[in-house]
Amino acid sequence: MRKKIYEEFDALKVRLGGDDVRVRMSARPYWKQLEFTATGLRKFRAAMNKHLEKVLREKEARETAERDAADERRKMGQLAFLRDQLADEELVAFNFGKLEIADSDGWETETGSNDWNKNVYAENHEGGDSIRLSFHVVFDSKKWSLRVREVYCLDFNTGVMVGKRGKVKA
Image (cartoon, rainbow, N blue to C red; front, side, top):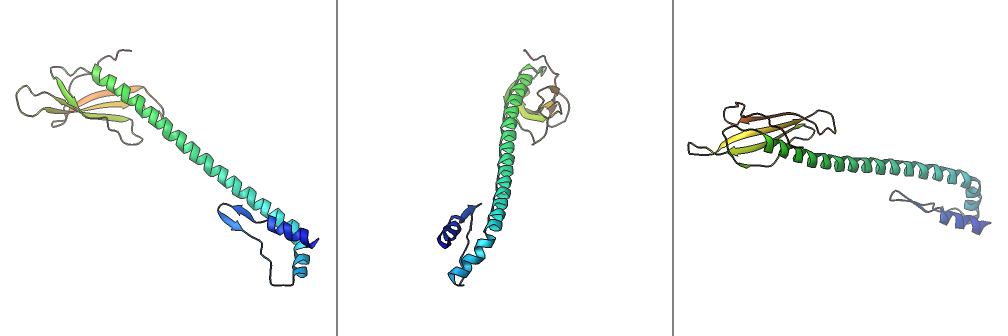
């Protein structure tokens, strides 16, 4: 009996969440320790099982939250890619009037914003530096929307609207 209880205590060295939980023998005589532990072993096992279940539930909740966050980031990346493509199509279809576009920067947006903007440079026929324009594509405010609500272009220096929205080819 004593040997069996001692073996069970050795078996209860359980690793939980990176912390070692160990049952240590006291300085009391071995037989007194065995008598004490024989009565409390069931309670100790129940408490350890309860603690283990709690730790496993917390770990599962943490992993689920991390997985959900990773899915959200992946979806946001896909949404940004599709919005980039739609914004490029709007830029190509936009009617700048007499202005000829020479160059442009990349798309910029703030996290959570539906307004995508890009600096566009038009040739200056009077000579000098090119004309800097701020081209904006505003998407619908629904979270995963790809519907373009508004497209406009502003002269960067004067703030005056330039050109008009064209038809995007499907």
